[in-house]
Image 1: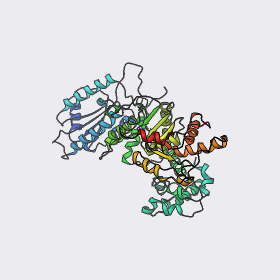
Image 2 (image 1 turned 135 degrees about the vertical axis):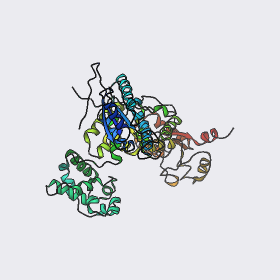
Image 3 (image 1 turned 180 degrees about the vertical axis):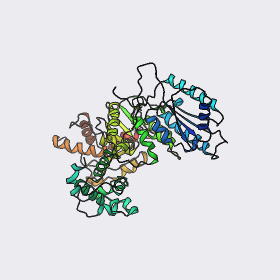
Image 4 (image 1 turned 90 degrees about the vertical axis):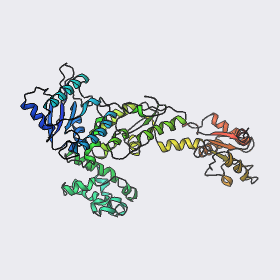
Length: 149
Length: 362
């Protein structure tokens, strides 16, 4: 099923971040970061969706179930959604999911929502730098599945 | 294994009582929507004559396992266990479970089973409670599922309310931080490994608890029937009923007052006005004797009658009032030394005069 486990005894913990990026804005921004040759940490796996509003809680929950250390949901700025209000839907969903995940003991920094427009390649990389740094500090997901090594 | 249930499945005589009462069948009108049809499918499957297809899977999951069928079955077929076992068979063949809400709650249940899980909502609960203790309140997964729904479930009010009930009874219950999901859904969807994992982890935490009180009916059934815990497990309604019962009084008609002299009403006229009164099953003319009349021949036969009367009283109230010195003495004698190993009935015996005077204003 794709369970991932991290080796925690060593000091070189590299967090795994799953990012959902909307086709029209934030995914384009990630493309721009690439073509502009801006360096950013390789810890992220970007999943393109048509709109941040189509990100369902189950995608994020499955990401954590399968061992992701962090999930970054990105989309257009409010008012700039290609589908008008998809990002508002995403914002509401993330609020509710954050409450539930917080109560489960998941650190708040692990789920992040960031609006990034298609021209903001730099904001994309900056967000990832910061998130990777924060996750390196707080360590691997405590809710990961332990395997006997 | 579903094959272990072959004898139970063949007990079905096709009477159709299950089908008549099944709430799902009432709406679906599929023969396999009710127990009789499902048992036929199961039998066919075991015998190798029925293959698993979409209809088969739909039949076994389109059932809420409400147990009406089993309750009505005159042949005693353990229907819901068979349905659960068939779901288990489907899971072992990697047939996807048709979760609702896209399987969100299944993932949440799994996450509570992880090593690093810890409840972080206890700060929202009001009242006095501990992190560990002999009396445990099992909160279930209400705190985690409520935010994901579009309507409220009154989570803070429910759990704080439970703590308040305990505090009123003078108890400070414990809500351990690392209690997992009870695993009910894992069990009923056929995910036995997940259920065993959750049961094992919860049993370690609840192993030393003497009393566990639960608000959720599904958690209650799971902890009481599907776990093997040492402690006493009560649904919150049973727990509160016990508390309510403790606050009630009942009247034991002394034989010489009641049957000999016909005085039944006056004590009740008084007691119903000054306390929360409840009648015993055998009262008035049918009242059970305390076991002795005059200081004659009090032996084990008398004691057996007496114990039965006290148990009857304990079943309806916390205080039994009587107005005969002989009765009072004999009841209190028994309460000062238990007869059987199971201990004393939880009942206090008081004299009518003493009780009434102590309840008078001023």
